[in-house]
Amino acid sequence: MENRMSNALALNEQVVLVTGGARGLGAAISRAFLREGARVVVNYRNSREAALAIEQQAAGRALAVQADVTDPDAVAAMVATAQAHFGSAVTTVVNNALVDFAFDGDARPQGEIIAWERFERQFEGSVRAALNTLKAAVPGMRTQGNGRVINIGTNLVQNPVVPYHDYTASKAALMSLTRTMAADLGPDGITVNMVSGGLLRTTDASAATPEAVFDLIAQATPLRRVTTPEEFADAVLFFASPWARAITGQNLVVDGGLVKD
Image (tube, rainbow, N blue to C red; front, side, top):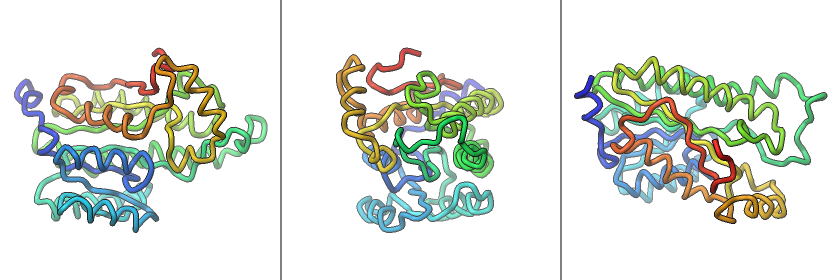
């Protein structure tokens, strides 16, 4: 087991799957890994042009693959396509995809009227999708004796300043899955961690947020500014890197110091 942990791959040796990797935060994560020399599978559901733009910018190190991550067969086919294309198993999975959600506090359904179907949709996009990618990628990780799984969470679990009931509940469940999977996969040299952000300036999901809300959040942070997708992506790189080889089952909040947990 000690050898497995010491065999952690450098970033430029990794084959990274980023779900929802063509837009917003996902695009920032995809580009961050590409900047460090990794090979990246840019998963998308509908954003074909954006995914192909990243592929074309990366000189053969990026591969755009369409798949609905809530469909286990589509995810298995995507992982197989990546291995065939790069000649190597997926080493790192970033579960970033977000199912049809906008951070608009005025438009959110309040607790007494929210429909259970909204919870189901977010649980499908967060928990089921992460389970699908794990099931597809872990056999290859296990064969090579190490791997990285990084789940994208939210600081709303610790600080529900805006009560997005469905989204926050799904991310809390994903945090639980992060910790249980870390215990299950640790003996195989596979780490499972979460990076949780606050409101990011700016992604497709946060574009609906009024500017005044960004300003209020900025003033509440020690850094006096709102975190960018690029800054958040750097924290994802840390968990994928050899420097994080002894860290698993953890949740790192990256929000400029807003939440202290």
